[in-house]
Length: 120
Image (cartoon, rainbow, N blue to C red; front, side, top):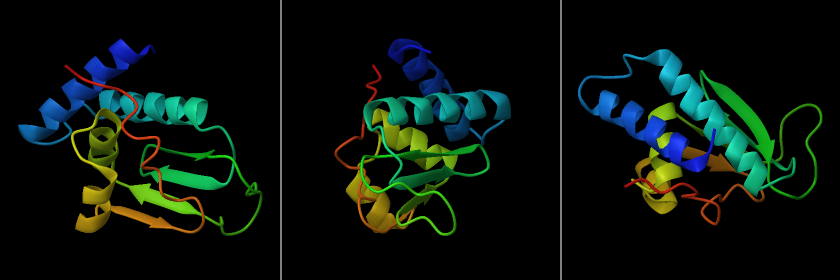
């Protein structure tokens, strides 16, 4: 999915959420998975596990790789917060301060990578 298509998909999912929740679960899952793929592309590596339950998780960001057991760094948030971060509707600092994102461990600050898609 190219950036323009992903931006449109994310905007649709967020608009749907704003008027009553994630009624199209498949669209939300596709947007989250595509955005996680994009994160891996722009921040390759295996030092941070990024979890967006219930839709997906990836390892990204250069550094020491996580292979077994508890990851050294974990970022976890809900799908709506993640998509808002991806397109810049909320900043990393705002998401952390509000408790919407839980980040722990070395290299878990993803602010240098977000947002990575702009919406019109």
